[in-house]
Length: 96
Image (cartoon, rainbow, N blue to C red; front, side, top):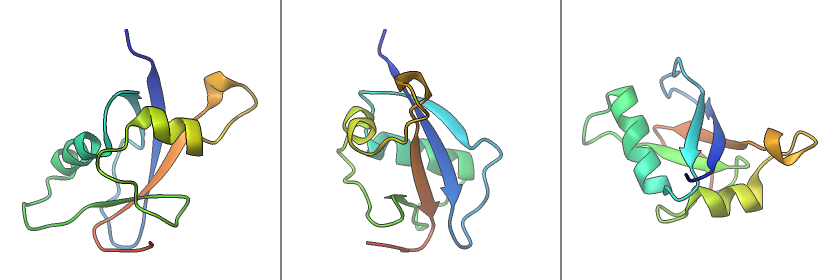
């Protein structure tokens, strides 16, 4: 079974606020997959955009896996079991 990455979502600007902000994502999944999943949860139409940002500065590439993102950008809570990746999301370009 693949390890999971804990992802915390924070909205930016006028992006809809999700009821669920914490997700467990397989390490092998990509940002492209996650984008489609969150688009469905938000019921965004095809013409509406969704952007994700790391460290409020740059947008990860759609082919980045959560394994790479966690290894490079996860916030630690003292031990590895408390690591989580914070992604900001927006429906308009915000950073980077």
